[in-house]
Each structure stands twice: as C-alpha cells, then as structure tokens.
Length: 275
Image (cartoon, helix red, strand yellow):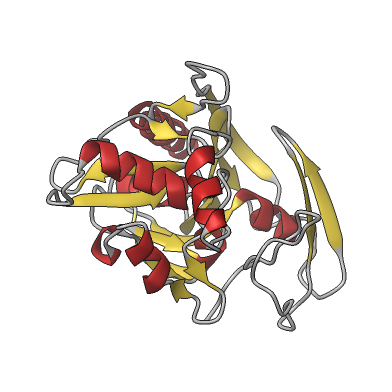
C-alpha cells in the first residue's frame, strides 16, 4: 500500500510517495519561507503554502499514479483564519513563533489563565479582532493541518486532529474537545473552530488530487516524528532539531495530573488519538 505524505514545515513543503516498506519512491519540495516584518513577528502567505502543497502533491502523484491514501504532518500552532464562502484568508497567517500576542498572554496570565504566545489561542483572537471585531462574518479558524485539508478537499471539511488541537491552548485533555469556557473568554465561536477527528482513519477524499485519494492520517510534526522513530509505547523519548529543538516523552494513558505548563516549561499534550 503506497501513501502520499504531505509535510508542511516552517520553511517549506514537501510531498512524497512512501512505499509499503517505508522507503520513499518520489519526493517533491517547494520552499515557502515565513515573513518577518518586524522583530518578534512571524507570518506567512497561507495561499502560497496551499499552492505549494497542491503542486508538490500533484507532481508526486504524476510520477506514480494512484495511491491508497494521504497522510499529513504539519508545523503546529501556526494559525489561519479564512472566509468560509470564498476560502480566502482574511490576513497573513501567524506563525507559531510569532510574539505579537505576548502582551495579551501576560494579561490573561494575571487573570489565572496560562496562555503562551506560541499557542494558537491568542493568535486566533488577534486575527478575529482585526478581521471581524463584531463577530458577524462566517469565518473558519484552523491550524496548518486544517488549512491543508480544507485545500485538498476543496473546502468540504474544516477539521483538525487531537495532536494539533492539543497545542492550541483551547483544548481540554479531560474531554478531548474544545474548552467552551476558554473559547468564550476569548470570544471565539465554536462554529468557526475545526472539528476534532482521530489522527488515523478516513477523514475525507482529497478531491483536489487525481483519483481523490482518501485522507487517512494527520498529526502535528513532532507527534508524527514520535511514531516515525518508534516511540509508540510508554517510556521512549526523542528530540528533534529543526527550526527549534523539541523533546517529547511518551507517558502513555497515565498522563500528568496537571494540564498546564510547569515552571520548567514542560507540559502534557496528546501524542495521537485513535478511536
């Protein structure tokens, strides 16, 4: 069973055809660099990112023909808001490294809410406050996985998986769903948020691609690398160096008692969700 894997990183997009033995048959890449208009600000052109995903995926498929499914791994917490009817972003997307909402996070922390600027929560509020201050427009909110799935399905679904949702700052690890109290605090409508789905299993056909292969897997890049490096049982850890350095330890179902960040900067997230 060959799969098309679309990987959206901080500096580029690549699509590869992966054989049943986990070797790569074909790979196509495009550079998509973020913009830094001022110190601490990191944004990117979501339309260009989507075009790169389509171009590389189509180029890979053109070399091999049909595949049995599509898997997606993406940078986490970067945030896009777009018009549901037109599919057009309302503003440049905000990268996970963007610090423009640091002041908002400090105000919220003073109120007892632990948000960090590298989470999506205050980025979503910032984008909505500027594009739709009265909250009257029919907008979609999503992380990069949501945006790429929206693109590949030609606007059929707005979804995210639990591994990506878990780093937004708006996800409850108790219910594995959006935290309605936090959404209300930031004046974010649940209807604008993506539906949370399993990390593996049929999601929707990628109708923008030849043969409309089924999207059957999605995960944040760090969680996807856990699986790729065989860290699938409690105990193993891995560290990945790219734009940043990420250390992840699999603890299994017995998660830490606290869902908030510790003073040392560690925090629990969802590695993956199935069933």
